[in-house]
Image 1 (cartoon, one colour):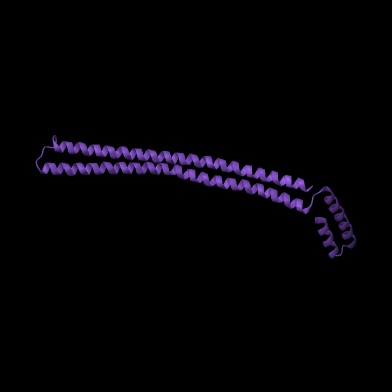
Image 2 (cartoon, one colour):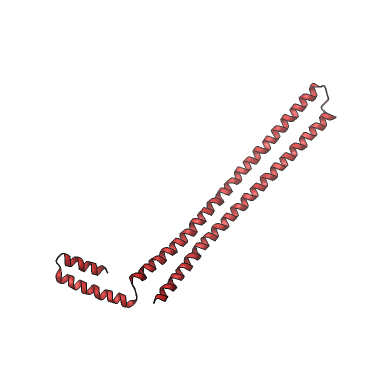
Amino acid sequence: MVQVLIGGLASLFGGGAAAAGTTAAAGAAAGTTAASGISLASILQGTATVLGIVSAVGAGNAEAAQAETAASDAESEQSLETLQGINRRTSIKKQMAQALGAEDVAYAASGVDLSFGTAKAARTDAYREADLGLTTSTGTEQTRISRLVERARNYRTAAKAARAGGILNALSGGVDNLLSFNQRG
């Protein structure tokens, strides 16, 4: 095909005999190409096959990259959840200290001994409530972190599946096009 173009250009610029020779050689080359079964349609089909394979692998890799990013985000959220848990527990302790201080002031102002009786029972109840709040906060934090770990693991599994799926799609598309090419003869 290139030789036909060169021959045509040579004839335009005055290379008459040379152009005729090149054109004849190009014609012979085209005849040889046609006899071997390679045609423009075959070349285009082969190019489309390669592009399809590259596209399928690229799509699988893009989906895998998206899943990997989501997994990294889930892992990053784990440390954030730990910090939020610490803040919740600190807040509970602070509220307990304020409540105990307010009760102590109220009982002391009324002249009640804080070491026994109602004042001691109120103090014990405040500690129990704070302990329950701290335990609940710790349990919530651990549950959320466990869910984030599981989510990250699932995203990583999805990334592996996406990569494998992209390769499988590429292979099946390549095989389909190869079979189609062979059927054309």
